[in-house]
Amino acid sequence: MLKKILVQNYILIENLELEFSRKLNIITGETGSGKSILIGAIDTVFGGKTSKECIRKGADRAYIELSLFLNSPINDILQENGIENFGNELIISREITQSGSRSRVNGTLVNQEFIKVLREKFLDIHSQHQTYSFMQPKYHIHLLDSYAKSTCAELFSEYSTLYDEYISAKQELEQIKNSNNLTESQIEFLKFQIDEIEAANIKETDEDEKLENELSVLDNAEKLKELTGSVAWAINNDDDSILNGLSQLKMNLSKAAGMDESLEASESELINAIECLKELSSSLRDYSQSLDNDTERLNEIQERLFNLDKLKRKYGSGSAERPLENVLNSLEEFQKEYSAIANYENNIEELELKVSNLNTKLTKLAAEISEKRKMYSEVLSDLIVEKLEKLELPKVRFKIDVQDTALNKYGSDNVEFLISTNVSEPLRPLAKVASGGEISRVMLALKTIFAQHDDIDTVIFDEIDTGISGKTSQRVAEEISELANYRQIIMITHQAIIASKADKHIYVKKVQNESTEVGIYVLNDSDKLKAIAELAGGEITDTSLEFAKTLMN
Image 1 (cartoon, one colour):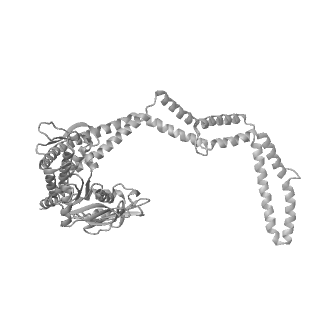
Image 2 (cartoon, one colour; image 1 turned 30 degrees about the horizontal axis):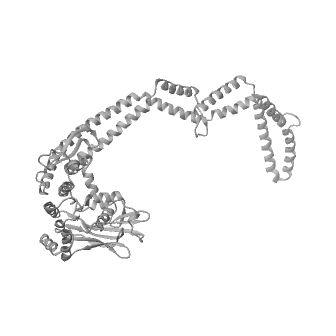
């Protein structure tokens, strides 16, 4: 439960430090005085939407900090997130700057998902927006399930997991059907493309480059034969050849080496050069003699290159350096697509069986859930009637109607709250029947039941008493006071009778100094009497003071 709040530069609050009672905290003040700013600050710390607009004019940041008493340990949650354990106290803060916001728990930065986990454990804020949500039939199934979760949580979770799997399988089945919805002619064309590339029997991605080089050789065979033959002849084939000349030079260098040993290395180098030229001459002679005008091979290469060029134009576009590589990549894609078509029937059958089995399991689970819902709907309906009768609706009838519907993410039930506040009127949808005061009482009944049913320590009511007065106010006050015996309550009210039950009375008013500020004060008994008198009579008079004393006594 909330122990203390510290607020700095948040909207119209410059600096505030406020402690809360463990029981009933009442907030009063004139309309527009800023009562909801305090609730908004608590909501902001617990992950509510915020922006830089909430920073007080002239300040560079807003800061809100909450200290909480822990009635139950949350050691595991803190340890999992690397947060220091302060024992039975938890400190949550949020800082809002011009560029964003940061949340901390016991000084450690945390994300909003973790804050959401804490909110679900410690706090329930009932606002006018939530009242609107509660009125919508689509929300009723969540309210009923929330009441049933203590014994049905695993069942709900199992159904949700299976339903996600079921939807995924259905989508996959539909996708396969759509992607494989090819005509017979399209399938034949795909097979033609595969056969055409496979028939080319491409073994190397640079085959075309090698063939282009071979073609160049065949096209220039005569010229190559003449050039290489003449070089071989010049090196080693007549009296004036290079080798004959070098042989004479070798004899001279050998004589010189005999006179000076230092020339032996030069002699060796010359001998090696002569041997290399002999090998070169032999190699060129063999090359020259091997060349021939092979017209048959020339035609064969030209035909092969023509076929490869055709494949490259059709299938070779892409980012690869060699177009033939893209041709082979295209072949792989065509083969995969054709294989998928070949296995199409098997894939369809497998997925259809999977969808059918999941549907059977879901239908069975949905039936179990429906049975639980119907049981809990009767229990919750009786409890709501009991609460509403205490809240001055003695003839009320209330029913949580559970009807079968098509399988969906929540099961196979349609849930709607029905009410009749008059004996002569039939049960009708809550949103179409209840007046403002009746809606407030239904919401209060639900909240008090859920507060008793779950482990949330703190419940905040933002003007849940709208539309009620007189004897009904007294009953609401008694119900709130009773609820405060086992839950911390923070409540904004305009009802004097309800305010008189406060264990701590917080008064809010706007203060006009150099700028507009919100002043928040904890009232002593004397000031509390005046505040209740003002609520009761609109102004403080002897009559309103006497009435306030009566309420407080």
